[in-house]
Amino acid sequence: MTEKTHPIDPEKLDKLAEVAVRVGLNLREGQDLLLTAPMEAAPLVRRIATHAYRAGAGLVTPLYADDGVTLARYREAGDHSFDRAADWLYDAMAAAFTADTARMGVVGDDPMLLAEVDPAKVSRANKALSSAYTPARRMITNFDINWNLVPWPGRAWARLVSPDLPADEAVARLAEAIFAACRIDRPDPVAAWAEHNAELARRSGWLNDRRFAALHFTGPGTDLRVGLADGHEWMGGASVARNGITCNPNIPTEEVFTTPHAARVEGHVRATKPLSYQGTLIEDIAVRFEGGRIVQASASRGEEVLLKVLDSDDGARRLGEVALVPHSSPISQSGLLFYNTLFDENAACHIALGQCYSKCFTDGDLSGEEVAARGGNESMIHIDWMIGSDEIDIDGVTEDGSRVPVFRKGEWAD
Image 1 (cartoon, helix red, strand yellow):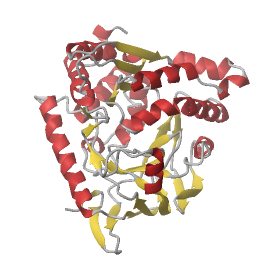
Image 2 (cartoon, one colour):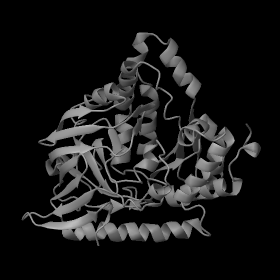
Image 3 (cartoon, helix red, strand yellow):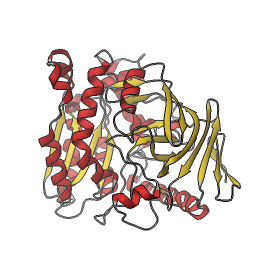
Image 4 (cartoon, helix red, strand yellow):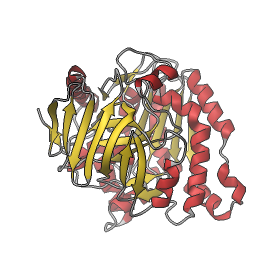
């Protein structure tokens, strides 16, 4: 299907590209941009390139992924293939980021692409990929550069979200939901994002003023105390990367987030939404933490992949992020289950296994050793999964043990 006949409003798609460049990346004059995207998302990539060059980009380089090639590997490749990744490619990406190239990922892949392939092969391939990508990923999680994720309404994704609709109608529905969540349906989307970022900054400021030692989540299947890293800082919306550029890493975003203490998480928690991870859908995750580490884990679907992910490295069973999102967020109120972390994480409070964001500390740039000393986790993975709903309460716990309501029934308590 050509771009002209695609069931997506071209004017809104162009505004999404503009927001991704101006709000998401805030490209500086002469800065290069590295893009990754599904092949299907070429219409959006072309518009992003247009707006990037208008903003003064030096060179825009797209890297496309193809579902057919991915499936061919799992169906036909020899066993040796699944313990390898294109190290040369990820080394080049790390070199590009070292040279201050901006990073954008267009997401819209088929969440169920690998549902029927051998989960052991999926796990091995994911581990190899995570290892190869570690140097580049650390530059992203450390906010060394300005980076951004932005969605594309892929047809397979749309069919999963709206299985009862004809394909074109499902794409159109998903596209409109994306435009609403990304504030593209507003008269001035860039101004709408400025207002939204100000509100997220206000929420972050309130949490930073309280200096909580921990957050306590309670609700059905959940009684979890998440200790917060020493000297942690809450962030949300626009952030200043270490290269001095203010960017919005996620379009859309509804979260405020910080770094938990890797050794101070206790209790049990149940996921409230499925996790789509590298083409595998993992449902009904339930885990128990002791001393900051997951010691028991289960899932009704995708459990084998989950357990192998948890064994990726020493930090994979510990938390690298905790994020707060009200149940009344526009993404939650859409009533759609997106099966996509970029959206579902912004519909509910969530935690992330693995690598922490080392920028979430009050006193600026810290070395890896200093981050670890404050309680920040290190891992080759960073996987968000959702634990919030309209039945979850959250208390902030101070150093002296007193409690302050933060969320009640999924909403901010203040």
